[in-house]
Image (tube, rainbow, N blue to C red; front, top):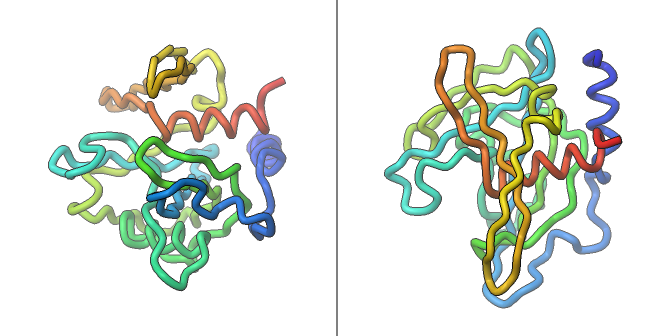
Length: 197
């Protein structure tokens, strides 16, 4: 698949940036609004930038995640995604072209999460904040959009059976990264909406 064809499929998967139906608003008592950015960057091909959280973090220690977090008063949910990306990996809004968003969803951590997808300028310097990010790494988009790399996992949670997909990845340097949970399911949703035949 060419890089242009891959980007066309990504765009097909996305909803418009403007949210007119309140999809990002809280749906349950005690929920907070949050956003993540699925950052695409062109190297020799399209890659997705991911972060590994420090094991010392009080919530989700050691997990692989997109840049993101809870919304602050007075900002749109897209502004949340851009601010958190700047705070976590040092990439400013001027170096990000937001393409659209995936459907908002209720996370198990009491957040109403809206995932955005954006293109990071290849010249942008990735500078992880060590307080929130142990490391940042890139995974080829074609790897993540290949269903052969989606490992099905069934879990029983909150009185219901759920099917999840993990995406274990070995970096060229040999480091193993297990992409799972909300991050993997967001990637899986991108595949479902834009790449699944």
